[in-house]
Each structure stands twice: as structure tokens, then as C-alpha cells.
Image (cartoon, rainbow, N blue to C red; front, side, top):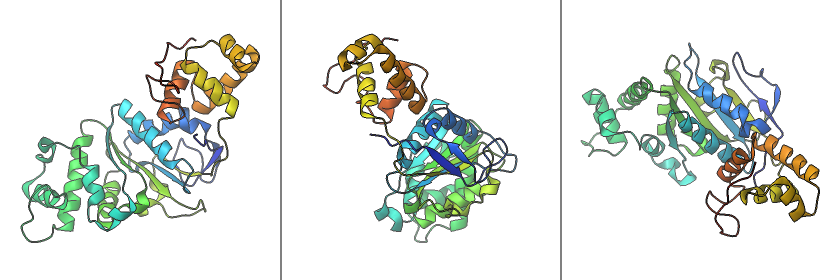
Length: 303
């Protein structure tokens, strides 16, 4: 069951966001506030980076929140370049960058000048090395040119989960790209493990003061879950039952069911039953679309 934190501490933000050090309500980070953060990732500077950094200990829901942000960014039509490095890959040069650029087409790579493309192709193991390792400056410049080229067509989001496991070579490239994309429609969405202490290091050495309406979110561990009764109501919603039918099934009153529904909507950031069920499925609180917990097909959801 998903743990939904009660609050988050903003370690850095720009105009239009909560102030530095301000504690904000984060139930909406699985809903409306998360939508706002995703919108900001597609905005241009000027002179500041659109960034969202999710930071917390293991089990705080960082990856769940990161995945939801990635999904919503794609729904908005952003070009999301994503990677999820693992600890064993930290010693493999450019492993993260290889995953990050995996969906970029040959035609898009082809817009780069020859020397830059060759250096990046070698770094990403897209071509046979000529004996010498790729020039780091050429790789950096090529990656920057590639990201900027993509951003001319639609906003680009560089999304990295478990950033603490990103190999140093890839981290260096992202550092270079992020610092030089302040005037472009390039956003940075990262999740990183941290102990929640104020002033913990931000990935790539980024300065929160240079974020444009972005935030650093420190998630607190397991402070709120769906109650057992709320989860029961949520499960019955999938079967298309009305509030009266759910009340009869659970041996309670329709008024109590409506109260549970209000709590569910608030926690999931939904305004209706269909949205609540779809978001719960995306967050892993319910089986996927097309089946119930018993494997039976879903019936239409009664409003």
C-alpha cells in the first residue's frame, strides 16, 4: 500500500513556489501540486533551471512519485528522457546516459556535427571506438546540443531515479547540460536517497537558488496510509458499486461511505470516482485496468 507523506520541506524554490524552508501539504503531490510541478518542468527560464528534486530515505515513496511525474509529463506531450540506474552500474562509464538517450532516433542524432556525434556514439557504444577514449568535452557539448535540439520542438524533461547510483561520467554530462539549459525548455526531474537532513547535497551540485519555480522535496517516512476501510471502499469502486451498495456490502451507512470517498479523493487528488480508481491503479493501490482483485473484469464505475 502506498505511503502518502503528510508534508514536505522545501529546501529551495523560486518565484511562485513555497518559500525556502516552508513546510507544505503533500497529499496533493500525488495530485494537483504534482501537476503544477510537471507544468513548471516545461517552462523556459529566463536564466533559471526548471527542476524538481525528490529526496528521502528508502521507503518514502520517491520512486512512486517520480514515476507519476514522468507519466504526467508524457501526458502533457513533453519529451521525457528517463533512466533508473542501479548500484552495480555506478562503475560503468556512461551507463546512465546510454539509458537516458535510448529512445532518441538516428535522425535526431544526425543533427549533430560529425565530431560531436562520433564522440557521443562512442560514449554510448553506438559505434566502434577508434582506439582512443571519447573526448569528455566533445561528449558534453554533443549531449547539450542534442538536448537543445529536442527542446526546440517540445519541452524536454531529463528524469533520473535513484540518482545516487548514477555513474560519475553520466552525472558529469547532466551537470554540464543542466547548467547550460537555463534559457531552454529543459526540465530536470530527479529522485535521490537522502537522510532528510537540511542542507543535504543536491544532485549534480545544482544550486537551488537557480531553480525556476522548482522545489526540492524531502519526503518524510510512512506518515499516512489509506486506512483499511478506505481501501475496501476503493476496491469496491472498481466493481461499479454505488455508495448505497458499498454501504450495504460493508455493513455501514451511505453517509459513512461518502466520508470515506471524500478522504480517498483528497489523498489521491481526484474529484470523481473514475479518476480516483485510475490514479490508484497507476500508484499500485489496485490491480491494473481490466481486472479486479479476483481477476474478474471491471464493470463501469457508477458515479
